[in-house]
Length: 185
Ligand code: 6PG
Ligand code: NI
Image (cartoon, rainbow, N blue to C red):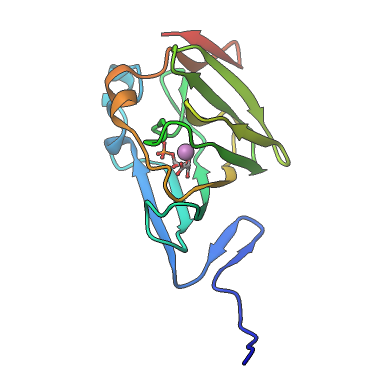
């Protein structure tokens, strides 16, 4: 027997649609350990959205040799001079890599290795980024519109948020004279 089926998910433009899509929103209130300027943060609304993530998990989390797909939507904004950004993480299985592909907007992929050396890559529509294993990754929106990118990663990668929550990245992305600058923390 053979069969022809509709796809489980539609990824059109920047939208991911289907019954199996998981969606999460992170607000400033969820990210109080992430931004450096605590006074600026305290003056902003805790329910201010910073980013949304839509994910397709076709296999269970932790499955060896499966793949996950997600779209991240970062709102434009700053806390003090620091751009709105994702929490950032190492993968729990440290050697697991990932691809990011920018769809819309402008931003920066901030990467930090296990020796805490931080670097950044510019993101703009069409830019493709390979994130090697053993590398923490976070994205920041440096523009005035939404930053949208897709991501592909192994289903057994997992997320280690703890070490970033405790120590942060060694570099933070701030606006200086209207330009994004990677400043040491
Ligand atoms: C992943 C991806 C990506 C990431 C989002 C939100 O490993 O799942 O890197 O989907 O999770 O961009 O970033 P945070 O997970 O750091 O909040
Ligand atoms: Ni990741």
